Image 1 (cartoon, rainbow, N blue to C red):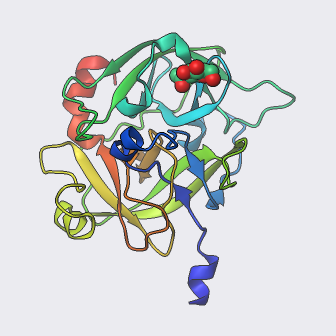
Image 2: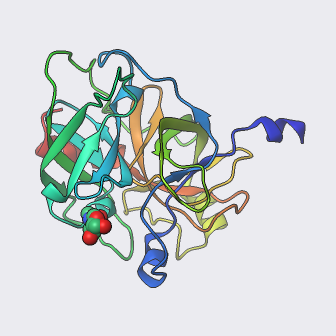
Length: 264
Ligand SMILES: *[C@@H]1O[C@H](CO)[C@@H](O)[C@H](O)[C@H]1NC(C)=O
């Protein structure tokens, strides 16, 4: 349909971590293929998109995953994005309109993964990063942590950085977005099957794009509904498979845990 041609091709989600275990080629590098480019923002106090950061490798600056700044001292990402030591990573705030080469960054002081996170079953795929921003002054506006979980019928937006090149050479530095709709775990299980779809107590949720293709990429980046972060890209099944939902860590399901970890 003509309409579908106009729909942005899509944020590529990072594919299944279990696949990555078996396929050495599989990289955690997130990749946004197509999608709407998000305009850069001039002020840290404006909206939520400025908070979407690129988690990078400290030794070669390679983009690895998405992350979201919650406060001056804390950011959120997927637990599977941070298997190494804190100093092996840093955050780069690429959605800030930088004049010259002054990209805001944050060092990572500590990583607090959810204690029930499990690599193979991808449950509770969430981690708080203790950060130190390399700039001072402007304050991020308000909190983007929701007070409750979102309903399962809402329209939300996923965000990420990444390249549009299927060969994964270099990354584009601009933020991209795509619209998705949350679906119930029952619907998700119908599509993904009982082994891949998340279970009720896993702290995970599913969302599906409308006429967009899922591919690799974007782990750890936020799913934002009505200005609040409700999910983190976690895993999906395959590339370019129509009607396949992606699986996200539910922020709402981890509010209690988050409140024990940071002052939000
Ligand atoms: C960062 O890159 C180096 C060199 O390519 C690699 O050895 C290391 O494992 C990478 N670290 C992370 C956290 O990906």
